[in-house]
Image (tube, rainbow, N blue to C red; front, side, top):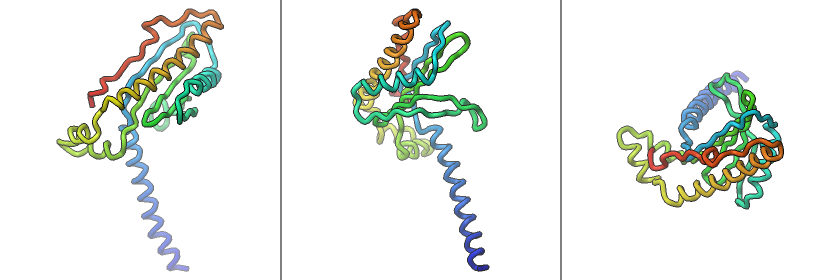
Length: 194
Protein backbone atom coordinates (compact mmCIF):
# COMPACT_ATOMS: atom_id res chain seq x y z
CA UNK A 1 0.00 0.00 0.00
CA UNK A 2 2.83 2.40 0.87
CA UNK A 3 4.54 1.61 -2.42
CA UNK A 4 1.33 2.39 -4.32
CA UNK A 5 0.99 5.76 -2.55
CA UNK A 6 4.65 6.53 -3.32
CA UNK A 7 4.17 5.93 -7.07
CA UNK A 8 0.83 7.74 -7.10
CA UNK A 9 2.38 10.78 -5.44
CA UNK A 10 5.49 10.74 -7.64
CA UNK A 11 3.80 10.22 -11.02
CA UNK A 12 0.76 12.26 -10.06
CA UNK A 13 3.07 15.24 -9.51
CA UNK A 14 4.63 14.73 -12.96
CA UNK A 15 1.18 14.49 -14.50
CA UNK A 16 0.03 17.73 -12.85
CA UNK A 17 3.26 19.52 -13.87
CA UNK A 18 2.85 18.30 -17.44
CA UNK A 19 -0.77 19.42 -17.52
CA UNK A 20 0.13 22.89 -16.19
CA UNK A 21 2.95 23.22 -18.78
CA UNK A 22 0.57 22.14 -21.56
CA UNK A 23 -2.05 24.70 -20.51
CA UNK A 24 0.55 27.49 -20.36
CA UNK A 25 1.92 26.62 -23.81
CA UNK A 26 -1.59 26.31 -25.22
CA UNK A 27 -2.53 29.77 -23.97
CA UNK A 28 0.69 31.29 -25.37
CA UNK A 29 0.25 29.67 -28.79
CA UNK A 30 -3.50 30.24 -29.07
CA UNK A 31 -2.99 33.98 -28.59
CA UNK A 32 -0.86 34.13 -31.75
CA UNK A 33 -2.34 31.17 -33.63
CA UNK A 34 -4.69 33.26 -35.77
CA UNK A 35 -4.28 36.31 -37.95
CA UNK A 36 -7.09 38.34 -39.39
CA UNK A 37 -7.92 38.72 -43.07
CA UNK A 38 -10.70 41.30 -42.79
CA UNK A 39 -13.14 42.92 -40.40
CA UNK A 40 -16.31 44.96 -40.45
CA UNK A 41 -18.63 46.73 -38.04
CA UNK A 42 -21.61 49.01 -37.95
CA UNK A 43 -23.90 50.62 -35.42
CA UNK A 44 -27.56 50.91 -36.31
CA UNK A 45 -28.61 53.97 -34.33
CA UNK A 46 -31.98 54.14 -32.53
CA UNK A 47 -32.57 50.45 -33.13
CA UNK A 48 -33.12 47.57 -30.74
CA UNK A 49 -33.05 43.88 -31.65
CA UNK A 50 -32.48 40.56 -29.89
CA UNK A 51 -28.93 39.17 -30.19
CA UNK A 52 -30.24 35.59 -30.13
CA UNK A 53 -32.82 36.31 -32.83
CA UNK A 54 -30.13 37.96 -34.99
CA UNK A 55 -27.89 34.89 -34.60
CA UNK A 56 -30.78 32.56 -35.44
CA UNK A 57 -31.58 34.48 -38.65
CA UNK A 58 -27.90 34.74 -39.59
CA UNK A 59 -27.27 31.03 -39.03
CA UNK A 60 -30.19 30.20 -41.36
CA UNK A 61 -28.89 32.64 -44.00
CA UNK A 62 -25.31 31.30 -43.81
CA UNK A 63 -26.60 27.75 -44.21
CA UNK A 64 -28.59 28.86 -47.29
CA UNK A 65 -25.45 30.19 -49.02
CA UNK A 66 -24.58 26.72 -50.35
CA UNK A 67 -21.12 26.51 -48.74
CA UNK A 68 -20.33 22.84 -48.12
CA UNK A 69 -18.81 21.70 -44.79
CA UNK A 70 -19.43 25.00 -43.01
CA UNK A 71 -19.76 24.64 -39.25
CA UNK A 72 -21.80 27.22 -37.35
CA UNK A 73 -21.96 27.45 -33.57
CA UNK A 74 -22.51 29.99 -30.86
CA UNK A 75 -19.44 30.61 -28.69
CA UNK A 76 -18.77 32.64 -25.57
CA UNK A 77 -15.54 34.69 -25.70
CA UNK A 78 -13.83 36.72 -22.99
CA UNK A 79 -14.06 40.50 -23.32
CA UNK A 80 -10.55 40.88 -21.89
CA UNK A 81 -8.46 39.02 -19.32
CA UNK A 82 -9.26 35.70 -17.64
CA UNK A 83 -11.53 37.39 -15.06
CA UNK A 84 -13.53 39.54 -17.49
CA UNK A 85 -17.10 39.02 -18.63
CA UNK A 86 -17.97 36.91 -21.63
CA UNK A 87 -19.69 37.98 -24.84
CA UNK A 88 -21.73 35.78 -27.16
CA UNK A 89 -20.54 35.37 -30.77
CA UNK A 90 -21.74 33.35 -33.72
CA UNK A 91 -18.81 31.45 -35.26
CA UNK A 92 -18.81 30.08 -38.80
CA UNK A 93 -15.82 27.86 -39.61
CA UNK A 94 -14.90 26.72 -43.10
CA UNK A 95 -11.57 25.12 -44.09
CA UNK A 96 -8.85 27.12 -42.26
CA UNK A 97 -11.03 30.21 -41.90
CA UNK A 98 -12.95 31.36 -38.86
CA UNK A 99 -15.66 34.01 -39.13
CA UNK A 100 -16.71 35.46 -35.76
CA UNK A 101 -19.81 37.67 -35.66
CA UNK A 102 -20.91 39.78 -32.71
CA UNK A 103 -24.32 41.44 -32.45
CA UNK A 104 -25.37 43.31 -29.32
CA UNK A 105 -27.31 46.31 -28.07
CA UNK A 106 -25.07 49.34 -27.54
CA UNK A 107 -26.44 52.59 -26.14
CA UNK A 108 -29.60 53.43 -28.11
CA UNK A 109 -28.49 51.29 -31.04
CA UNK A 110 -27.53 47.80 -32.14
CA UNK A 111 -23.88 47.01 -32.91
CA UNK A 112 -22.78 44.31 -35.37
CA UNK A 113 -19.18 43.33 -36.12
CA UNK A 114 -17.27 40.44 -37.60
CA UNK A 115 -13.68 39.26 -38.00
CA UNK A 116 -12.43 36.79 -40.60
CA UNK A 117 -9.40 34.93 -39.27
CA UNK A 118 -6.84 32.59 -40.81
CA UNK A 119 -6.05 29.62 -38.60
CA UNK A 120 -2.29 29.09 -38.97
CA UNK A 121 -0.73 25.66 -38.46
CA UNK A 122 1.27 24.84 -35.33
CA UNK A 123 4.29 24.16 -37.55
CA UNK A 124 4.09 27.66 -39.02
CA UNK A 125 3.80 29.16 -35.56
CA UNK A 126 6.78 27.22 -34.17
CA UNK A 127 8.98 28.04 -37.16
CA UNK A 128 8.08 31.73 -36.97
CA UNK A 129 9.42 31.83 -33.39
CA UNK A 130 12.97 30.82 -34.42
CA UNK A 131 15.23 33.79 -33.61
CA UNK A 132 16.48 35.92 -36.54
CA UNK A 133 15.26 33.69 -39.41
CA UNK A 134 11.87 32.46 -38.18
CA UNK A 135 9.72 35.04 -39.94
CA UNK A 136 11.56 34.64 -43.24
CA UNK A 137 11.51 30.83 -43.00
CA UNK A 138 7.78 30.76 -42.16
CA UNK A 139 7.02 32.96 -45.19
CA UNK A 140 9.03 30.60 -47.46
CA UNK A 141 7.54 27.36 -46.09
CA UNK A 142 3.98 28.70 -45.65
CA UNK A 143 3.52 31.34 -48.36
CA UNK A 144 0.36 33.39 -48.75
CA UNK A 145 -0.87 32.02 -52.06
CA UNK A 146 -3.46 33.32 -54.50
CA UNK A 147 -5.57 30.29 -53.57
CA UNK A 148 -5.53 31.20 -49.88
CA UNK A 149 -6.37 34.84 -50.64
CA UNK A 150 -9.12 33.89 -53.09
CA UNK A 151 -10.81 31.32 -50.85
CA UNK A 152 -10.71 33.70 -47.87
CA UNK A 153 -12.19 36.45 -50.04
CA UNK A 154 -14.92 34.14 -51.37
CA UNK A 155 -15.87 33.04 -47.86
CA UNK A 156 -15.84 36.67 -46.66
CA UNK A 157 -18.05 37.75 -49.57
CA UNK A 158 -20.67 35.08 -48.88
CA UNK A 159 -20.62 35.65 -45.13
CA UNK A 160 -20.82 39.45 -45.51
CA UNK A 161 -23.72 39.05 -47.95
CA UNK A 162 -25.53 36.93 -45.35
CA UNK A 163 -24.92 39.52 -42.60
CA UNK A 164 -26.13 42.36 -44.83
CA UNK A 165 -29.24 40.43 -45.92
CA UNK A 166 -30.24 39.83 -42.31
CA UNK A 167 -29.60 43.49 -41.45
CA UNK A 168 -31.59 44.65 -44.50
CA UNK A 169 -34.50 42.33 -43.68
CA UNK A 170 -34.81 43.38 -40.04
CA UNK A 171 -34.28 47.11 -40.63
CA UNK A 172 -36.74 47.18 -43.54
CA UNK A 173 -39.39 45.36 -41.50
CA UNK A 174 -39.00 47.96 -38.71
CA UNK A 175 -38.78 51.00 -40.98
CA UNK A 176 -35.15 51.84 -40.19
CA UNK A 177 -32.89 53.52 -42.77
CA UNK A 178 -30.80 51.05 -44.78
CA UNK A 179 -27.01 51.00 -44.53
CA UNK A 180 -25.15 53.17 -47.04
CA UNK A 181 -22.72 51.66 -49.57
CA UNK A 182 -19.80 52.98 -47.49
CA UNK A 183 -21.20 51.35 -44.32
CA UNK A 184 -21.40 47.99 -46.13
CA UNK A 185 -17.70 47.74 -47.07
CA UNK A 186 -15.38 45.51 -45.02
CA UNK A 187 -11.83 46.51 -44.09
CA UNK A 188 -9.18 44.19 -45.53
CA UNK A 189 -5.95 43.46 -43.68
CA UNK A 190 -2.68 43.72 -45.61
CA UNK A 191 -2.54 39.99 -46.31
CA UNK A 192 1.05 40.00 -47.50
CA UNK A 193 2.33 41.58 -44.30
CA UNK A 194 3.30 39.23 -41.48
